[in-house]
Image 1 (cartoon, rainbow, N blue to C red):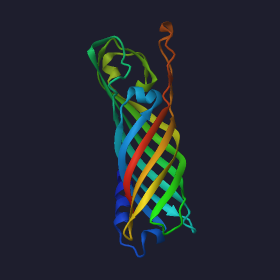
Image 2: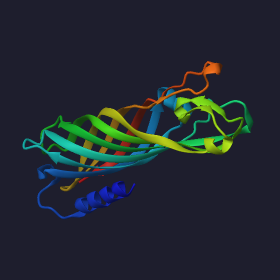
Image 3: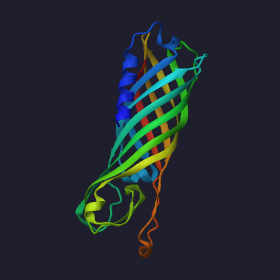
Image 4: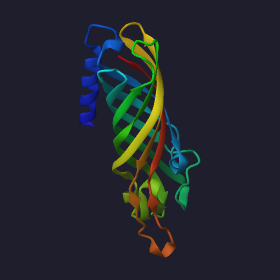
Length: 228
């Protein structure tokens, strides 16, 4: 978290530093944005639409048609209203959230010539994702087996409550459109899909037939922001 905060502060200071020339002439750009993130597949069955900020820095190549981008994003998701809850529960007392810290290393391909009022672009690249699930409330028999809760076994109830997670590898691909705001900034709308290979949660309940599974995640953020 401390590293992420330092990166956010540094990129913000860079964005606010006066430079000569317009935004299209610059070789270094900072983007600040945020918006909703939709979960797809099994992940979407467990957690609802999330939200969070994103900040990145892009280094354009000599032609300004291709650039390299580093981006950090934080996202928070509450439990879905139709999530498959552990059974049995006492009065339905189960609550959890999901959080991600995303570090992506992308190539950005501009589809329009430098200086265009409307910039279309593609973006794709690998990333490192720190993902965790936090169970904040649970009253039951201590038997839980669901990879998206990061638990498959029998635990004391006091140990069910808490955070579990780790680093996973992923890949993202998407596209965006930017509209120039004067000489030094651009408003953009961007959509990407992130696929993250999660850990294999092994079952410790062999007699029940529970087999655990993989906590792979599919995320679809929609980002609105400003690029300097």
